[in-house]
Length: 261
Length: 261
DNA sequence: CGTATCGTTGATCCCCTTCAAGATCTGTGG
DNA sequence: CCACAGATCTTGAAGGGGATCAACGATACG
Image 1 (cartoon, rainbow over the protein chains, first blue to last red):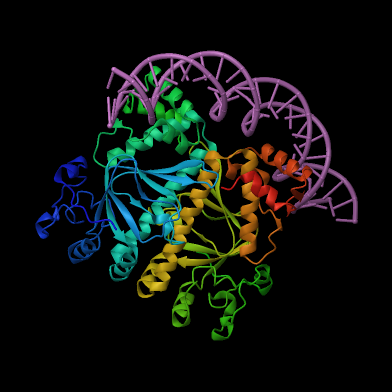
Image 2 (tube, rainbow over the protein chains, first blue to last red; image 1 turned 90 degrees about the vertical axis):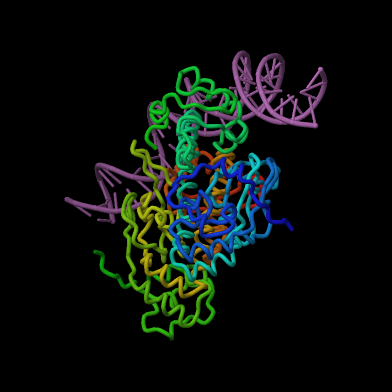
């Protein structure tokens, strides 16, 4: 269907290593496509694995795919075969109603695993759309669970990843259910900042990968409100925003707005 | 800490069997406290297990706890040791902010598993409060994952349960992010109806276990709005409501209001 | 350079919140 | 069994936050 794509080295540069500790590049001949050679291995699925366990996971995840900006990784109702780990780039999850309305239910950055919601009914329940040219690891699910039976640390990590997805969703539910538009935008900016930091980027300066409309859809407000509030935050000196380039000038004030949630 | 409690038979009667197929009561001496003897085994954690596998799970889950109405099963920040399966009764999950505000993030009925969000950071992230006198199975997590390594069907089921929790949360996010108050109430009633049906109860007649305030908190609206809309639905003949006793008179119209989400 | 997509800002409107008061229910003790 | 207090629910009136409608700038891209 889709042939494996070798990732050019230039792409990997986009993602800065989180932990440089002894990369296992020497252990394998294809560092660019293996978990052991991937700069994200400490925060991705192989977290906690080492030695021969890591090698076995490598064999499982040799297939990579490049997804062009604006195209889908999978669609709602597609049958579920594999999980996908984001290697570079970013995605949005889009829930679709039969009435045609769409709603963004999540944004996904490198090291995060996509497709977890499909495990239960073996069918995806939303579209995953690339926000920029992106690369993913394909992780065949049946083979992954077989391997997890033999590698306790892998089973542990898999369950952790699912659990943290539940935690993240619950955080968003709190946000959607009880925050004003102003609080939502502040919380959104702070969350993005944290995620960027976790990937090794500066915490106070980042590029929005998504449109105002995507943000509004995700936060349950209109794109006009998003725009107005970003303007206001800028006027009040909390941020500097030039198009999608965001700089947090006063993170403390943003936290104050969110109000300790 | 808390001693095992034997469940009186009268309590078990509350939960009607979903599938009466050859209950395995004869296989064990303690049907009232074992998975094999539990009327929920087909929709709970042991789904898909049989024979000696089921026996092993039984040994893991011998401890039961009775939680009185209004008391907590666990609190946010409690350390995570066990998952809990609801045997009878019902619970709400309550997220707590440092500012003191509370928000209900979920309702939980028999056969559902509580505590999944705590797997990742080994600490619970919300309170679980009993809405009525309830019984739960205590499922020690470390032992469960060890057992799941030996029983592939158990690992599969565990991953499915986590995944379906993610799906459920995403459904609520769609609701919170893009529905009017009227749509939320309609969707809430229909969802409750479906869950009751799944447990073997009538689909068009049920008892609300929670207050209007709980419902409002969960749906992101005020208790007054909940009350007003229930009154309006009743006036329009969509439901009959006497206090917490609800009868769906026109489910089709409710679905029409929700609008095919 | 022109077109489409994306973003900003303004004016108006309405759904839901907030505040308030009363009704009903629950359960506890006398 | 009844009375009373606290919790819960209902309903009304007024006000505001965000949606909607609309027009115009800015940017990206072929």
